[in-house]
Length: 381
Image (cartoon, rainbow, N blue to C red; front, side):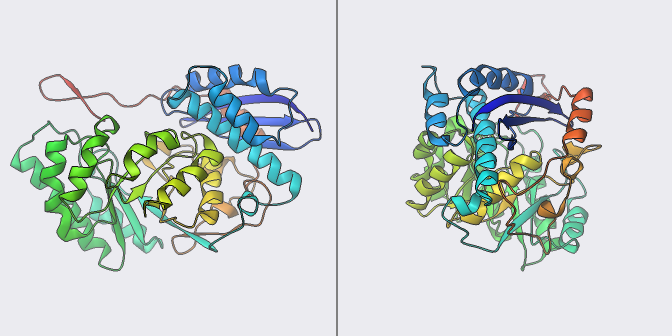
């Protein structure tokens, strides 16, 4: 079997899909994208295709090694995301060729269902308690919220209290039998994180995500030592080498993204690395259906899995959502806040190619929001 074509599709709201076709009629799908840099990743995929056209798609590990290391310059979100989407597509082909779901090819399932969480609110949450209640009533047992909008490096008592009050309201709404995740989104300085974490302890978050920016990861050990709240990070780390510098320094939860951190092959290795430090996995996935399907295949096979992010109904997806691009939404339909294990081959989903092609004619130019502080200076989004 040989790869004969690799086509990319910019599909709304902010995704990039990859279709890899073979001479035996087996097609694999991947989702290589950096949110806000989809065209850049698309160009990287086109460059990498020079190595893959005419090659055997089943030599997944060899392709991963060559694509990540063969260009001399290595790493970073663009290259790692391009490789990630290609890797997903190759695993999809491998599973379809063998008539097996990917999780069966990773050693078999270790669980029958995967716990999911739902987002509430947007970047500036207001009615978070009501939104949390709605998600619990929809069957989810965990919700995630942004902790704040923009904050100055050491903000006022009023702004600090506003974060605490929102978390308190959501805890009251979901009760003690459900979980709450708070995403700091890298918006807090180390000083603000140190101030806020003890104040949030009474509300027992499942974890706090990105307490500080990834460039300040060396500060995580001190933050972890100063709070009982489990800390999570990893959506902006792109390889096991990046994670090597955080898993042994106080985090409780690793959050690689299967569309950013080198794909199924690399996230599986990151999970194994995390397991050696008693760190669990809550993979990042605010993206499309292919990325989520790949994440779920890993979740069924990873022993140290905790919970899975998903973006069905996410505020970014208005007008275009995950299920729009599937022939059958069943594999990405959740019951009781869980995804059931699929036995369908490959990634376990069937992409509606006609719909993808129609959507790609509209395309998108999604960009990350640009925030500024009251004094006009740049603020982390």
